[in-house]
Image 1: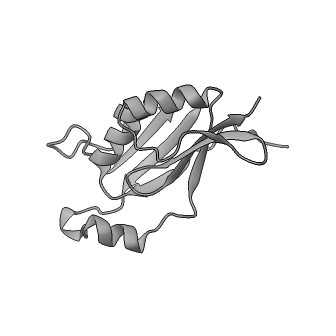
Image 2: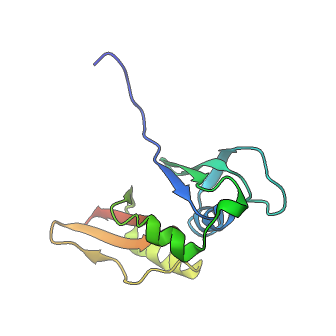
Image 3: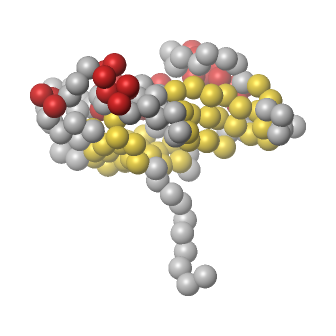
Length: 139
């Protein structure tokens, strides 16, 4: 191969950047690496940002540039289902992650379980309905 690739960084368009950043930073533990200029008011008010948790990177962008363009959250979610999008995080301590994340207030409907193909998995959604799965080979 003539070139190297070291990582990939998914990009999500989000309805409410401050709510998304509170979820990813305050609840999941991501670090804010970079962002567009601050828009004032809320300390998490940006149009774009780049986040990192361990070796996982994620970029978020506000889907609505102007507040007057923003429909209700229900209308936004109806138009942009995201049922087909899920990030899978390699996480050797799925049970420990479940305990810590639920203690931080992350809503996770079911505790981790082992899938028929041998992966211990914990699924939940971010504020925009994007799927997140913390998983590791069951041992």
